Length: 333
Image (cartoon, rainbow, N blue to C red):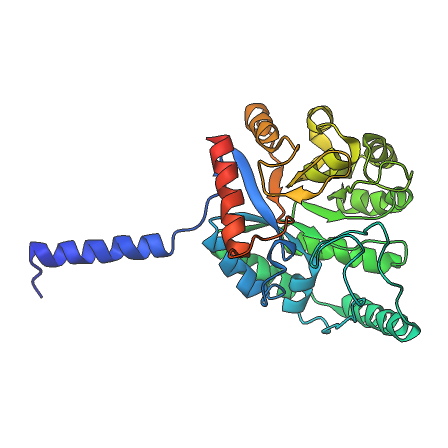
């Protein structure tokens, strides 16, 4: 068959369009890897616990790395579906969908809810102890083929877990190709977790909130320093919004001092003095300055977007996340 120059031009345009359609995302802006935490940032969406749907949303946002919470990962691998009955309403003083305890705390669970939670936890534990790593390797390939790195997996590591269950979490993280695990245990539990981190040579980042008074809470710099003392594989997942709200000063100096122990930052904007989450640029958190420091110092940990401010009327999660991605691009240009 003979092709005219016009035919060849049409073929070339079609190939170019296909290339654009299937182009892999790249969210390394100015040398800084930007990603997000999922499914939390998509929690208002009905498909937020589906690993395939999450991959589609992440690629649509142009992001090439993710901190993935364990629920969609384990659902993909065939974990039992656990339906936990939530309390009657959100924590006192917080809007629906907001994480963290409010001034009044959550309503206590009924005995029936407590029993159901214990049964669900035990069912998941038994599944984990028999789980194959093949599904995790398959999920890793699926994401990598789409251009997205599963940089971090977040497990709820706790004192209630037997050793073999914690060991499973580290094995799963390695099968997923993760560089780090993140979690939110009390400070004292990081001595034990650090031993598993050393065994597997996989750093664990401890996530902080705003409690700066309890010796067991990650909120003040000294809490992370205690965990660092326990193990060289203990690290920090610094939420710069929570840090600012709890300490009323920027975490920049802490990040600079301990940059080699940081697994990732969580990006959000909050007001000082336990102030609320607000759209980026309206609070007291030095998001732009910290991103620019990461670029200048060539830090290789991920800047992780966490959509936590209330979604404005007329908008949705994807629109607000796109704004956060653009904010990072502009800050790192």
